[in-house]
Length: 239
Image 1 (tube, one colour):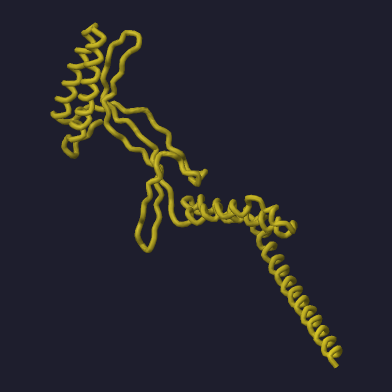
Image 2 (image 1 turned 180 degrees about the vertical axis):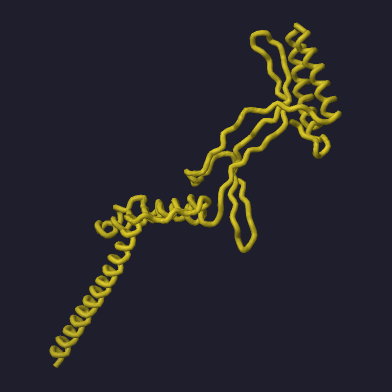
């Protein structure tokens, strides 16, 4: 009696395992069918003409395609290799590409130049004569990222180094040369006159130590010139 029950129990377990195998095979076949449908859709997109996005969406479009490419490369290895070690760095690459797509879809970039007044002090290496020029000098570019969240625009300053995910198709600003300007206020003209008197003193003395002292005073005076010219009345142009 006990042997009969034991055989029946083993037969029952064998049938359960067989049914479980059939269920798993059916699920796998369904996944293969879904996979084939998805692959066909991807192929139609890849070999089709594609839609050209708006200019401000080009970076998001490129990031989305890069993420899709990384996902397909990863899927190819998963389907053809039965060894997770062969994935190598692909999961990290996919994660990074998805992050770039997410950020590109949420906002836009800006590279900005800042113009500041500077008193340019130049010493001719041949004649050792000093000259002064009031210029507007560009600084930067400074990189910013803008995005909208819940109806509010946000801005993040990212510094002077070009971010790794800055769009390849977006223009990178180059620094133009400084532009000479003239002070538009009496206060600025007075400060320039003071600096020019120091320059004359530098050029008329032969004593090296005296020249070094005058140069230090002139640099300090240059900062005063910059402040005073920037304090000119609103509406008065420096150019």
